[in-house]
Length: 303
Ligand code: MG
Image (cartoon, rainbow, N blue to C red; front, side):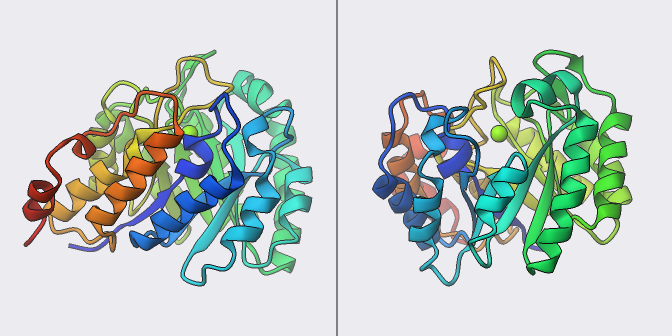
């Protein structure tokens, strides 16, 4: 079976709501441990205003210190034009543009309307292309919003169409509050893949209600091959009440490797990275296989 790409977002999504500041050194150490485990794409930080998300105030320092790693595609989240200006000094950086499927979440998370957010994206992407950088257009709350409830597929698809036309390098569909179910994932992601055509599509998964792994597999069956998860299942959005951890990267890698779907990730080393991530977090980690007998887990993965 064909392989998958896993983007670990633990240094950004996993740590952004931690109340105590985590040192830059520890953030870089987490990225290094993830890279040692074989992850080649990591979202390391967010170029957001430090007043909005104080934990990400050291974004530039983190970016400077992880850039030594040649194998690694470093990704940073950007919420606006200012974020792009800060990002543009880092050659080779991949950007993740934050958009939203609902007006209320767009206002709370980004402080602007959906239309305004897209207008700015349209300007930013021209500069991104001229600098030879890549940008993903990520749609938050694609399945449900903490303020508006259920989200109609049409709203997401409309945004996806516009972003593809604008030249986005990837479309990110995010279940920000972990409210999706496998049938909804199957339905929406098939349509997104259809609209996206040649453009890559990724699925950002939260495990708030324990449905993360089922949703990931539904996305795989629908044709998605890029997944965003966080080691040890840490994570949450400061602007989405009730949101909890991402699906644990190690649990998703375990699923795929057991099924013979290649991830390129070493589970033993990934579990070490997951332990370290959990040690930085004050939240209850959501991951499962980290708590089992390690030797046995690794033996189960031998084909
Ligand atoms: Mg998230």
